[in-house]
Length: 233
Image 1: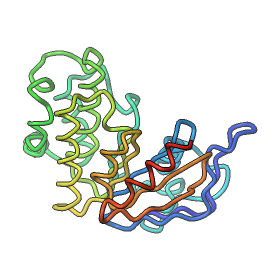
Image 2 (image 1 turned 135 degrees about the vertical axis):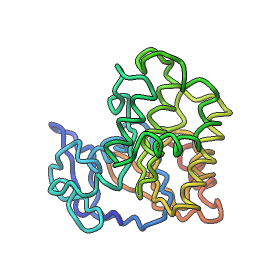
Image 3 (image 1 turned 90 degrees about the vertical axis):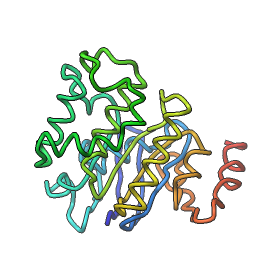
Image 4 (image 1 turned 30 degrees about the horizontal axis):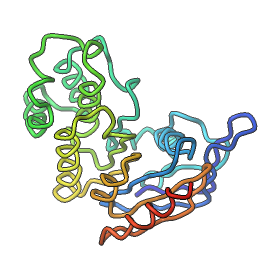
């Protein structure tokens, strides 16, 4: 479903991403891990055509994302607060996203119902703009905006950041629900190894822009490998 070929992103003298090959199949849940500066966010931005690659390409269903708009119709993402429209209320933002996806207002809020527990009664009907929400609640709005239309691919950068423990558990439940019920391909990064191991079928470990391990995690076997790595790095 997603394929990377000879992908490089260079900033000045620093090579932020250098991946010769990576394939992600439909329905996989991929955890992307690595210390700060490993290249995780840069890789996401290349996948979403937010950065122009220095070399190589990212293919989505066989089409280069830099040369096609089709992938946007089936991809949802939340990388940072720049994905939000902070002068809107959450309701207005969700309605905008739904409209872009061809959903009516009624259809949009029917789909939003799935996120009711995740919202903890702090998102809807608050009568305030997104910019006035806490970091955690902005995170909830962004994650929901990426997922509620049920895209085929979801990309989330550090989705557990700023969330309280109950909300972290609920977003894990939502990730697993989407994967199991809609066969959604989900790619997430996180510094929280426990959460990553819990939700990922496969974990990709990055260091200095390169993939150094690609770990099958169908039996949660990645935990010890990751613990051993991060103890020494």
